[in-house]
Length: 168
Image (tube, rainbow, N blue to C red):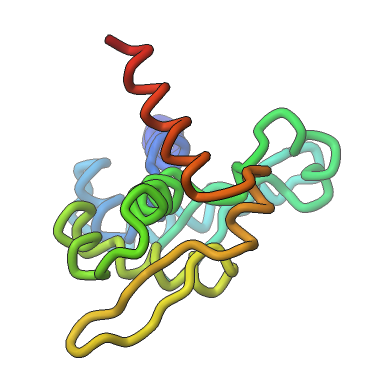
């Protein structure tokens, strides 16, 4: 049981997106969702102990690990911009680099999970979304520029191109 909890913790830590119960069952080679639920509950209770810095959170998309709110003020400077998960950051970077861009193109590149990423990015104010026929046009907002401390979307694109050139 402890080894399964350790694997659950590792999977939650590494996953860029929340994990659904079925995903957890597959990762841990468990056939029973009931066993997954029991394992999740035990792991959650373990993290609720006062001396722990993380918590297990259930979202619409599944389960994910987050820093407890009581600790975030002390450690947030260590990982700026980490209030967005890796999947959301990747989706946001593709939107920003191609903005304005049709949502269907983002889904083609990032897959169906990008729908949830876009929804969260719009909700948080990083991206604007305007309906355009059967798709939507996505663009960055002033909040996006302010959040990443850049003057313009062109500055962002130039930084990205410089980063690519440095890798070659």
